Image 1: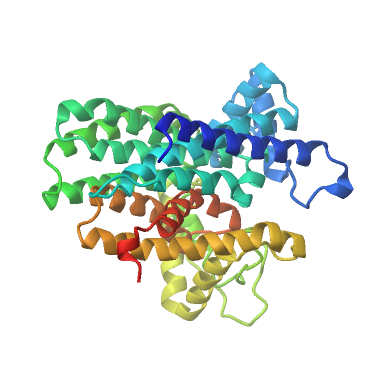
Image 2: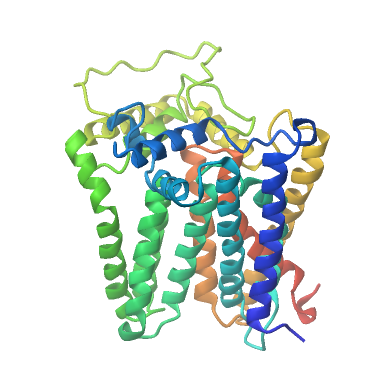
Length: 433
């Protein structure tokens, strides 16, 4: 007999929190010779800490004393970090423990979301509980949660955004959808301020909602709910965009816009990166490719429309003149993001991180095929919600092929992979081959 929902949520939360707290204590307090080469504090951590301390000192959001320098870094995590410093202390261990609590909450959200998306017409399954447990014990997530980086909170907001959107899709009228549309827009806005890349998820939500109405899978009320979510999303982003307008004369989300990454990550001036990290400009080309085209252009501010247009032109020039090199760069991004572990990892890294990841990936791929076969056979109660779940996952997979990719970006995909892996493990006997 399945456990009551509250006990399932409590069990998943307790297991996830216990493992992450243990990892936090180990990574922060154990002697160096006992620790893996998995640093809690990184170069990016120093950037966030500097900005957080500046906020607490009343200097506003700055890096190296400059507002402009901070304009390419999403601000919400630094403000969150400042709040943690002000309330419970500034040690890395304190931040690790707070992150552990948040990431355990992600596992709980996953129980609810997956339980909805994979519900069967002929009765309940334990797929949501199993998905939460898979995420709770998954080593990559356990060891990444304690790090002084934005991922723990960003993944939580990502999963929350997906869950609220999926809950919105279950409504049948505008009256029922009002509250969910407000919450969805708020979560999407906060997720974007935590990580600019999450703005693509907002575009995915809008595009899918319009498509559902056009296909008459949902009523016209969904367009109104989407408009409300978009308005809330805009309100949440407004203070940041007005700041950018004051500094740069245009409401750009980041001075490192998508066209900049599209240009530089596929440039004929650089070699592919396949070690699991992404540094962008660190690998100059050593083979004799022709020099980039010289374009006479006006000096433009970073992130402005002119700068983005220039990068778009250069990106098109890269593709038009050296398509094979661009394809090589795309293939390298696939390797860089989906390789089991980072280059130079020890056998322990392969054992603790690599093998569970490979098992999760194989199970998830099988689960995707089985879930969509069930949906086509009309055995799932919520096929639209399953499609939304899949669209959210692809949002954090496909754009990285064009922009930039590293192993750390998989953290946003793991919750969705856990859902499909759980489905592969709980597939009903009557559909087994």
